[in-house]
Length: 507
Image 1: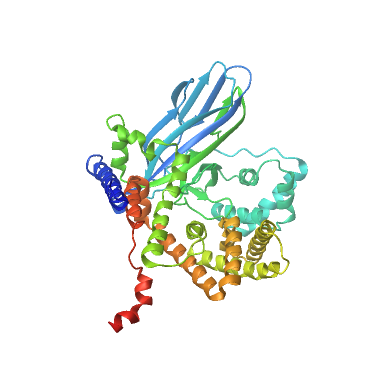
Image 2: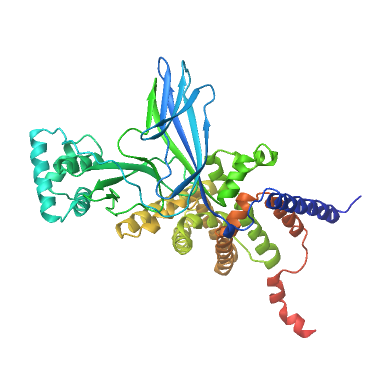
């Protein structure tokens, strides 16, 4: 009979070697970069067209993006099971077309592409067309004339004209003419801007694209305003009036026209899921081309839809945080309130940023403990008491969010990322600990939880760790082996060596 310690040693050794072996295979055989510094940021963008069928044949057309602004498109994939599919080259660019004679159930069509920005570049030239003056009612025309005259009086050219127009229509209290136009138009504010520019004789159109944000799901298209100032095209953000093409903006369509057209369907929508990865462009292309040759890639994270890849990008960091907790509790000997509560706090820190998160956590727990001490005098049953604490925590979060919003402290609005029930249960545990062990033990365990949470956050937010866990998830198997070994550790903790340091002096 093999002793349990030996069994753990054998299993842990196999796990560690298996994980490291798979990693070595991907680095040497598949040429995946081990360190993020060797690569560039490659974005995978997946678009989903959802619709419900109506009577008759179905035809779906999606305008495909062109590589503009220094972007390079690497690979494109279409999912069109059961549909006829063609890619049509038109003057405005490529168009994906799905067709089917009959359809009975709601359907989703997919288009996925990979791209990276090789250089920061401006948009190329674009045909100039004289704007058609909008059709207006008499009162709308009068208001439009006064608004355009006022903007012309205060501007020096088309660029300053559009800047003043955006600021005017975005003000909380616009002028009477601007407020009248916004109130009588049935289109969005951007439609009013285009009509005002057309009325003023300034060529303009929209540039639609995606705001790049790693891990974002259900993203929709955003719009920029592009005008011709007489010599070149200029881009403006229709919300902030900032000029130029933002670095995080991927251009999908430039100029008028619909991005999505669905015939024979209803309730259609276009959503995007985004994820970024630090791989060399050459490697990404190589992976796609060699997918058939290397079956291992079909079972990797890359084989999942982009939306699920974004979810796993965060989930794969949890074992690393768990390892930090194991290390700090077993080897260092730090006490925490709850075994894995620091992991949940660290996850909240990833959303709030560290110092804002620490401030919010301390504020909520301090206020919650004070209120919990009052509830203890009422002799409530446990379930009712914890439920009351949950409600109090939610109210505190709402008060903090409202106060920070009124004070203009937008970062404090991220208080909603903290897990409410976990916070309530933490307050309950600390309160019980205060009654049984005293305030000193609360400070020890509360401070220990916060310290471990901060350390876990620092490890999880490291670029190298994020790169390794996402591209080499098999390393987590090796990490499992190390945790199993630590589970059999029976020696002194570092804190105990410090605690009993006087005994060593006596010897």
